[in-house]
Length: 388
Ligand code: ADP
Image 1 (spheres, rainbow, N blue to C red):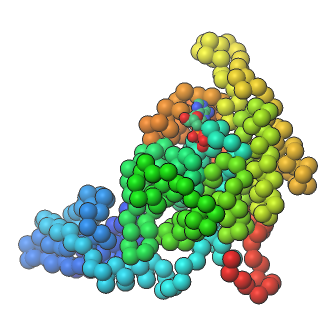
Image 2: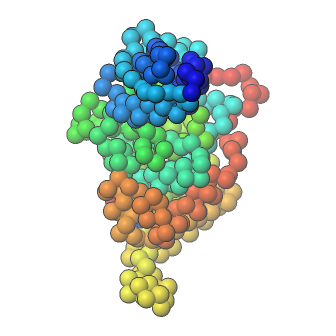
Image 3: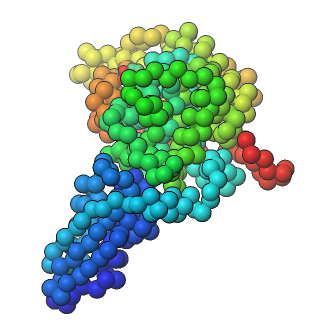
C-alpha cells in the first residue's frame, strides 16, 4: 500500500471535533505538527486549549481513530501539548468571529436560536427536572441544545445531567459550556462560584452580570434551542432576562395545587410585563398512576396527590389576561424513576424512555421545538438599533 499523504491525514483530522467547542480541531489551530514516515507511521502533536483539559482522553481517542482509518497508516504516535497564551488569544478571536465586543448572540435580530425560559412560582415543583428532560428530548430529535442554569437557589441542573463537579474550560475570557453525554451543553450559575458549597448571595447588579456572562461570555456556537432554568418567583433574574432577552418565550411550570397555581400565574404575568410571550403551562406531579390498577393494566386509576386543576387554572387565567391562547402543554405524573433519574444524573427521557412521564416530556419537547420563531421582542430593524 502506498504511503498516506499529508492531505489525507489532514482530511481525517478535520473530521475530529473538539468536544467542548464542537468544531473541527483543524479549524481551531489545535493541530500543531504532523509527520509521516516512509513506512506510514504518523507522528503528530495536538494542542489542548488548557493544560489538564478534562476531555483529553476523548481527543486522544478521536484523533487516533481518525488517523488510523487513513489507508496506508501503520501507526499513530500522538503527543498532546498545550496552547500558548498567544495561540489561545488567536482561538478566542476565531470563536468570536473577529468580534472584539461581547454581545448576546441570542438577542441579535438574525438569531435562529429559539430561547425558552422555564419559570415557576415556587421552588420544588419540578422546573429543573423538566428543563433537563426537555433539553434531552430535543437533543434526541436531532437539535443542538444548550442550557443556562440561572436558578440561584437550586442550580441543580449540572447534577441532573451527571456533570455536578465539572468546571468549564476557559479560553482567555471565553468560557466553554460543559458538554454532557447526551450532547446537551450546560452552564450553571453554580459554575461561576469559586466553591461549590458557596451560597450565591448576589443581588440585582451581580445577578445581572452573571446572567449576561452566561449568555455572552460563553461560546455557545450554533444552537437550535437554548433553555433557561430560572429561579422560582418574580425576582431579579427574571427582570434581567426580560431586559436582555425580550424575545425569549416562557414556559410556566406548576403543580395541580391551588397555592402553586396562584404563584405560577404571577410568574407568567411578570414575563408578559417584560414583553415576553408565555407559550404554555406544564402541570407537573399531576397524578400518581395507581400502582395496583396500572400493574395489572385493569384500569387507568389516577391518585390526585396534589389535588387537580392547577394547570388548567393557570392556562385559562393567563389566556384571558394576555388575550392570546396559553395552552396546557402537558401533564407529567409523579414517577419514582423521574426522581431517581435526576438524582443519578441520568434524566428519565434517556434512562426510562417508555415511562409515561418520559413520553409526555418528549411530546412537550416536540410541541416547543416545532414552534416557529416568535416575533415578540425581536428588533425588526425599523428603529435605530439600540444596545440593551
Ligand atoms: P424545582 O426546579 O422546581 O425546584 P426540581 O426539578 O429540583 O424542582 O424537583 C424537586 C424534586 O422533585 C426533585 O427531587 C425531583 O427529582 C422531584 N420531582 C420533580 N418532578 C417529579 C415527578 N414528576 N415525579 C417524581 N419526582 C419528581
